[in-house]
Image (cartoon, rainbow, N blue to C red):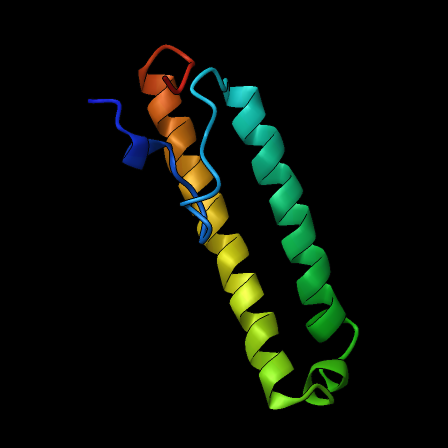
Length: 94
């Protein structure tokens, strides 16, 4: 697979955040685990602890909150794809 700057981008801020070419699988795993823990906590705050806290937010804040959650999911997917690429390249992204 050709190594291009496009391949190194991840998340909704892909113009800002890029995967370090020397990243190894444990780096991806740590980032994925961290983001999933944050996603779990954010979901617990609006669902597990009662949906009332979410319903009390303004419509704009509800939209922003859901957009944030979606961004976290996209980031995890992108990191997993990059981790798969790293495995195919002998454990390194670049």
